[in-house]
Length: 228
Image 1 (spheres, rainbow, N blue to C red):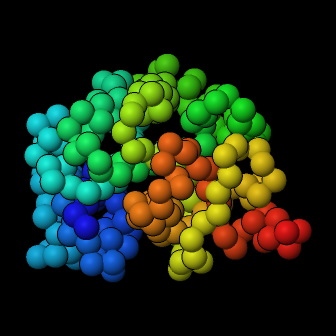
Image 2: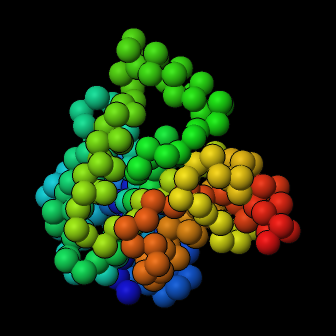
């Protein structure tokens, strides 16, 4: 399998690269030119295409011939960055490619999610701060996901909880709606977020789903497992 990872030099991106290589996949990574050195550990094992991760020509080149595309949607700045990235992937990825996108719990597909108070406070603070300094645009990520949900591609949008570093605990569990009891712990190992993204490539049950994930060893996940 040949895959493209957009946003390869970030923490999540590097975990996805390693999971993909462990499975014998051919990996093409896009990252900003100044971040290429962050991928030195994978030198000779992956193809790196330097460039902005919302550059349409860069994305067109990188996704050509790929069976899957893993995209880290980042809402940086006020230039519709996430929307540009998502639209380019939707436009240029091969027709039958699996498209896996990452975002946060604040994204809702059907409006039935109930965000925890901590996330609601965080979003309010972020929106207030960005009125002063436009370093992030949450609405851009919302629009990006709206376009993904409306597309006829083979997409999955993986909505991540709060993240922590640490050894892998295994494949995270998921639910369709934030607020479901299994997600109450709101914590996932970042390495396992990457694992879920890579595993989704071959999980057709996740096509046209927006799974909200939590660590499989999180207390809320263990509690639900015990009930079942």
